Length: 625
Image (tube, rainbow, N blue to C red; front, side, top):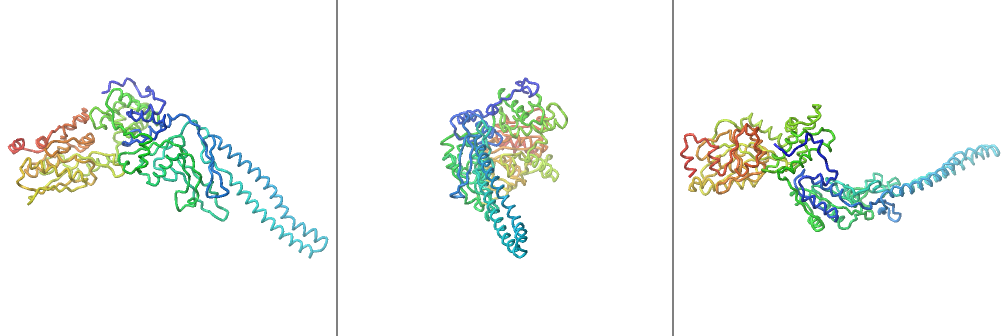
């Protein structure tokens, strides 16, 4: 248990007001952000999702010194309507300027409208007056002739007045448009451009469905500022930077270099494709983010620009399990409660359970995970359960109940597959079988490779004589790295049984989901093949995980906690793990009551624990030699 937590509930924990002080476990990144804010440098943050990249971007915007913000106004261009002009004024002055111009034009329009209205009224009544007046003086025939002439003159006058009124309206429409309004904004802004299309990021010209016949909207009225322009003297944050189109990244690079970028139509089929404004100021600081996979998709020149005029930071995925960091995690719980505003505060025991989960998710001994977004999901789930029970505070039982409803899709898929395979007797947890081993591996979703879950995966093997040399044929939904690692098993088997006789070894992974990771199953493969060759059954209540070196040593694997969880859920009674991974497994009493965890150093240890040597102890002694 944690002794460093002296509070009764998270309500007692003081939350820093500055965003930069709320960042947890990213001390190096925080120092870089502070330097970047002073010198206005760009930053590239690379790391796993949920480690605080967007929070660092907001912190950078908060630390920026106060600047003289500006408003941008777009003007019609009488010389070239397809090239609107841009004017900048101090922040807050743009709206005043535009309203002043519009009011002046409205006054002119009101006077003209009144005059034109009176003239139109006169044109309507004049023919009837002429008919009455001249008909009375000169007779009906003369009056009718004069009436017809007056009617034609009135129709001509009304037409002239209509078009005059229309031209007056067009003049009013030509008033400037406020493009960027920074009124009442005292500090530099933070804009999140993650997932934004080119038009939203770089600015765009709206489509005009009329386009002609005097009904079209003036080009300057259809100009829309992009996030790069709104973030002038502020911060533009773009996550998953490598997913942007190369053309968009090139334009983003141009904006960084020039500090200004014209707005044009982003679709060649749009009516705005011919419109291009004057360059609009966009002196923003770019905070680009992503994982290592996004680096491949980044435009080389864009990354070079960031590296040459800024910093690159690799985010921490875990932090040491110290008293100071434990208190930081407790503060994180308080921060999440305060931000959510829908859930009650956590009592100390509930916070301790969250910290225990942080240890489990770190997958490394004496460390705490920094994938805090996922941990925040557990916090909110526990809070929702407490609210549903009308509890005034979140207790440990609420956190324990939240584990089930906050499971990832991968966990739910793995649990369902285990359940289904048990019902079809694909996963066996009792008895013994020759050439069949329960292995522990990871599966991941197609849409989120970083989200993984452990799963119990049966492996079946067979061997037949080969003429020239031994081979291993692997079938199942496994990657190329796993297939290549399986070839190492040949060297180990020949070390155990000699190389005179050659075999074709067949290994089948009984799974429908993609297995994630490089080498996490070769220990199990080797055990299954030894069982096949020596006709010695394997205990089906034993699960194995770990890699295998060409000299028969057990190699550690990633995400060991996920695999142990899967083994417990799958009903395994004993788990064989590489000795190097033992310290990474949270050894709580509840876990130890359900399963026995045995560390192994080499393949012999695996064979000794997993195979049923009853009646064949002499063969085991030979293998030991």
